[in-house]
Image (cartoon, rainbow, N blue to C red; front, side, top):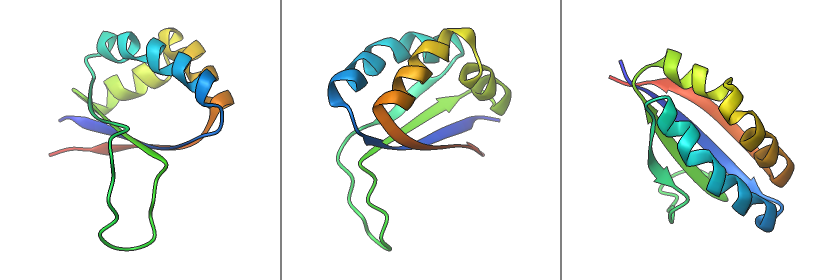
Amino acid sequence: MPAFVVVQIDVTDPERYEQYKKRVPPTVEAYGGRFLVRGGATETLEGDWEPGRLVILEFPSRERARAWWSSEEYRLPKEIRRSASRSDLLIADGL
């Protein structure tokens, strides 16, 4: 069953965040993941949610998503993201 990683990001250091954006794609691909949404325009249809940046990744399974998130390959990019932004991140099972 596919799993989706959904991330709401408020970038606080755009220059440093660019380093993250360059480093993360190979780590996602190494775990069978792919970007579905990566910071494009959003439009709020209901409620108050207005993410600064929205990212959605698809992985083959929850296990592969968790393996990516906790991997050595993603360790440095994750540190960069955390130092350059505030993020909310979750995994949701697909159908």
